[in-house]
Amino acid sequence: MTDQTIETDYLIIGAGASGLCVADVLVAESDASMLIVDRHDLPGGHWNHAYPFVRLHQPSATYGVNSLPLGQDRIDPDGLNRGLCELATGPEVLAYFDRVMRSQLLPSGRVDYRPMSDYLDPEPAGGRTVHRFRSRVTGLVQTVAVRKKVVDTRLGNVMVPATHPVEFPVAPELSCVPLNALPQLNRPYPRYVVIGAGKTGVDACLWLLAHGIDPDAIRWIVPRDAWLQDRANVQPGDAFLARTFGSFVTQMETVLQADSASELLLRLEAAGQLLRLDPDVLPTMYRCATISRDELAQLRRIRDVVRLGRVTAIEAGRIVLEHGTVPAEADWLYVHCSAVPFQSQGPEPIFQHGRIAPQLVRNCQPMFSAALIAFVETLGDKEGLDDAAMNRLCQVVPLPERPHDWIRMQAVVMLNQYHWSQHAGIRQWIEHARLDGFAGRLHRLGKTDPVIQALAQRFKAAAVPATMRLQQWARATG
Image (cartoon, rainbow, N blue to C red; front, side, top):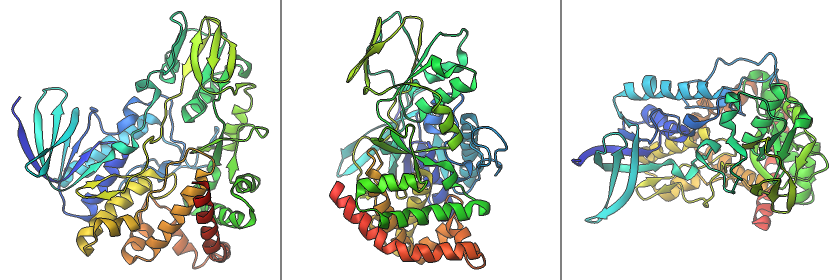
């Protein structure tokens, strides 16, 4: 169909959480125009495919775009998250992102949103790059003339089981379904085999237990155990500030107490900063997963935990794994939870010539990271910063995979935090940023609260030497 050309300052590829966070800050902090191209019918990225019972594993107040709160700022009165800040459901998150688009971005008059559209590979033409996208409905191809930059959010794409087929053969007579199918069950099964140990695997196990399945009727295939964060240590709000700040101070002090990187992780566990499923199994993975202690107690009720590596095939009569086999029956239900929700390609500079590639700049906080990156981009125009200067302010925090990545992440975060503290504009933005939820409270309560003042003194004493040791260990562990 006829090619049409659209002019815009920023072309944002993807209307998922990161893309919307960038657009939200660009609308608030600049007069730029932007075109958002996304393959889904609704904004929200992978949330369009999430399983019906999914919830955030971090507090709602720390998620979403900077300008619009998510949730009602409630404390859960019961359940496995009782006493902690509410966790939004998947439908709530999807409705929230639609509200962001309809009530925040489009009314600005500077956002052009094109859902159901595929971004096409760029092509060089006459010494410049031609950007195009095609409508999935009409087939219309349109060219985009980008005056400033392309914001490419695809580097952090999240894959979910519903859109990520199993990577191993399954005997045709067996029932293997993604966890999205659990709420559609119309009969009981004598045994449920949950495949995967990430957040989706955890959620599948908790869902089965919550619906009355005997823990001895669950077989959980855990290819690798993970270090987990205690959700109680990362709560926003004034009431939780002493514990949240105290947790961070404890981490820095623990770094100074440890004699090696390996010892550090065990000391962090002893100090209540890390958790694990089985106290007798040393984790070999860390991916920022957050859990409550009540959830962990439920998971520990499952005794049939298979630790023989990844599944390579499910055959009639047996499950074949990397390091052995276990029995299988035809009338069992096999629940696929093994999608890989992390960026597999290595990090790259965030600010490039004509391109922004949002990635983490603070550990385990993709929304805050995307928003701050967008704010730094606006500083480029206001203060004449080039890509190199902006990249120094936004060094990439590597997405974690191994336990020692906790060290690598923290080393970069501490350096980023220092650079932000030295820039008046960034420091002020963070203090007022909803997605930070910490710096502003610390600044305010630190003037009057003796507990916070004491913690600040401990942090001041530990921060610099701990950062130096983290950087040393990070270099040694690669």
